[in-house]
Length: 314
View 1 (cartoon, rainbow, N blue to C red):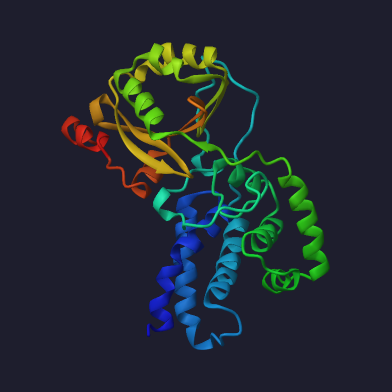
View 2: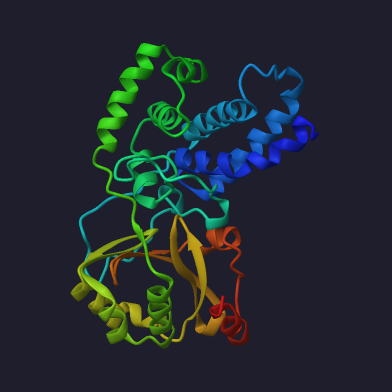
């Protein structure tokens, strides 16, 4: 039988997902998990087994995340939709929610009502909305609705009263009522067509794959485009600098996409994730903070064309 210390790493996926929902960025989440496991190792001799090891670790992780949330609040800077000509001035990457690598997410059973339940969800819409809640309110709704903790259990962890927890849950759930359904994962064949068209920079083929109301964003540049006409104008205008890119497949936050390298693979440029409705792509999320995200997603700092051809067959 394995010792408690040997069991700790097996909880890393659950802890990563929880810390990601709490903090909104995979890098912050990974640091919080490392801190959680270190604290757990140091406190193992005081673990009495009154709760499960998972519950004990989640309690530690929640407190770690609350401390981290006090130091840095990650919340995307929302603004009205932009135009194909800008703005292009980037803000700090620390202000933005970023995707979580696919292999960091635990395998879970689907929730009974996937339209409203947050259990098992790590999509960008949910995580962004969670960041708009006060940190303790965010923790309360995650502990109650993801881990099925009672108000008394949540209160013990958050050093709150059960009445305070119930009030916070009511406010948080009301805010989450506006959460859209989890995004549909684009079929791999659709992603492959989009990826191939992008590598060739065939704008007509790209636009043909987009829905009329497609959304397009490029964190940390505060640019939001809405509609295939504006996206087409951007791709033919400022976006034409992406011509000649090399792309390799990635998955994150429940979505398929690709890592993009400009200058024939010499310059890492964006981590792109796609949402869809039917056979049409409804959202294109291009995350430009490659220094933070590419290492987490296993994307190399540069790639040659031979390596790209091999990766494209993944």
